[in-house]
Image: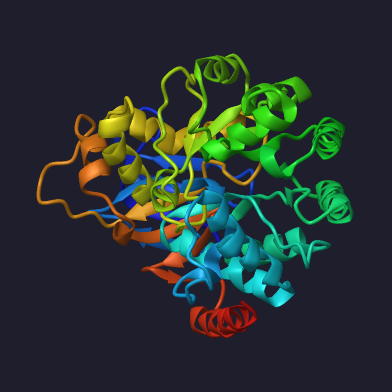
Length: 423
């Protein structure tokens, strides 16, 4: 079945040019878009699905630059036994307890919930950073299969760390290597302060062996810097750079809050990408992102807080009014930068045939000149009506088409209660 979009107001995501057209959407990961001025020129079969887009806006779908699928079942969970007083305690008493409790069913439920949330918010591709210390082997395949059931493209990694011992660290490395043999992905690391030199060296060697990149949290909290200086005699970005982490354009440095001018220069002069996660930083009270001196390779993520990239874009813009140099254009640029990261590194699953249809009935004029303002002050995920992923309709009239939402929600609720009981 081929999808044909009729009466389209198409917005080119790169240059924001508006075009009145009709579109035949090619299928598959290499599918393209055929534009037709005259709808009657399109060859249509009885199996094709025609969607009338009159009064709506059609543009490229969204992508998440940094996610944590494993956080999906945390919503509404009981408070930790001890209230955290700093970032390290937030990790110890909340997130590291959650990831240790995860088993196969919980991971699958988390991935399904995340994939559905992404799809309904207009995102068809997710870069994820996973951890489940007591279910390592096969965990990435579980997530990949769940994402594919919904129709979400993915670039996964396992969070390699020494915090659970050397044997577990090796299992993380082995899981990563096994997964990368048959799948596109990255070599994940938690953060400098939980990764010793031996494990870091092995991870970089695996990155080089698999022609991949490192996906790591960098100076999210000042503790990361203090630990690095005390234990390794250098700052975090310097240490990672010395090991070759920043040599790959596939490398993703998440957060980068507590870095100095020299570290910023190292990042700017490298091919690596930085991913900003504003709401997570606010939630953890770790500081504010500042793009100064980092260069142009800055994209946006959600850090597991939610799956709504329009929401992340607004947060980055509003918070940045006091702490960053950001305007409508740069906010949109970061929002869309993940597509550049994926295409420049030849990752599949984010081609032109990934589309979102927005039912955005603005009370004011919307055009090429003011679209950026509408992105910040008008558009929300509530305006996502249809979503096409790799040429396949995965959301129609706000309803997931690929799986039974009611059935999946029943499953995710069961698994969330199991998780909470274990906590």
